[in-house]
Length: 123
Image (cartoon, rainbow, N blue to C red):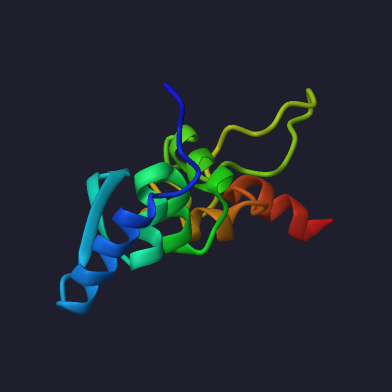
């Protein structure tokens, strides 16, 4: 199955007529506590028809890759520090367990868990 890059001119016209009539568009996506509903602009709705992940990313002002990474990470922002064995620490950052929105998750990336936060402050 091939995915279109944009909605047809007819669909765009229908979206515009609905918008002009005062109709708003809502969609929902998975989140840490179930479904999250968001309101889409007409251009985001057009995007949603072709690439839902890109549309949701647009709602939050982040990249499509960041939106998908938030979900793939189980909604957890992981500590940025490496362990003594050279592996990434598996602990969540402070406030990073079950992060409610992907834009907040992006903001938390690069932070440290409580253990490593304390250690980096002492360096």
